[in-house]
Each structure stands twice: as structure tokens, then as C-alpha cells.
Length: 120
Image 1 (cartoon, one colour):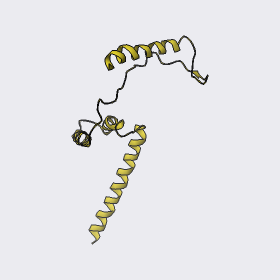
Image 2 (image 1 turned 90 degrees about the horizontal axis):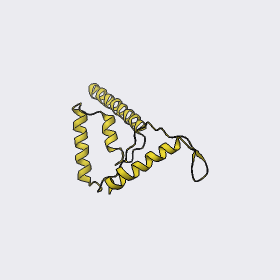
Image 3 (image 1 turned 120 degrees about the horizontal axis):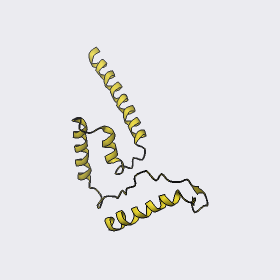
Image 4 (image 1 turned 135 degrees about the vertical axis):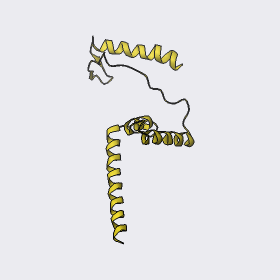
């Protein structure tokens, strides 16, 4: 039904709404006006997975992403995008900033540990 009602139903309806927003002023239920929607922006539907992933599925995906990133075949940003929905990551830039900060903290701690080993 995703194809029948999604691509030919919902997507067509969304396109009509976009076109209508550029001809008339649309309003929310509370009466607030909706700005005209960008008619040139591409529209697509994102569906959830058919079945919830198991822990083994998530582990396999994590291993695959790690391999691809380590091999230089995929960026960290793309890997985060791949798992964002599964781990409820809403703000990709904020997540990347947190990752960079944590990596810098780990690297600093590792350098301190290395200096301690050298002085012993």
C-alpha cells in the first residue's frame, strides 16, 4: 500500500497543497497563516522500516558503517544520517559537534596518559 497510497496518493496530494499555497493563503487549525511553500523543492516520502531492527541487525549496521568510514568510502556525516532515525538523532550538526568534542576530550586524556607513562 505504500506505493499505491504513497507515491500516487499522498505525494500527489502534497504537490497539490504546495501549488495551492502559492495561489491562496493557507491557515492552520488555530487560524495562523502558513507561508507559501517552495514549489521547486523536491518532495519525497520517508517510510519507517517494515520491521523493527534486532540488536544483531543494529550491530551489523554499526560494523558496516565503521568499516566504510575507516576505509574512506563513507563520511562520518553520512554514517550519522544512516542511523539518525534509529537512534532518534534529530539535529545532525549538533550530534557531529558532540562527537568532535568527545573525540577531542578522549585525545587529550590519551595524551595525558602517554605523558604519565613516559615519566614513569
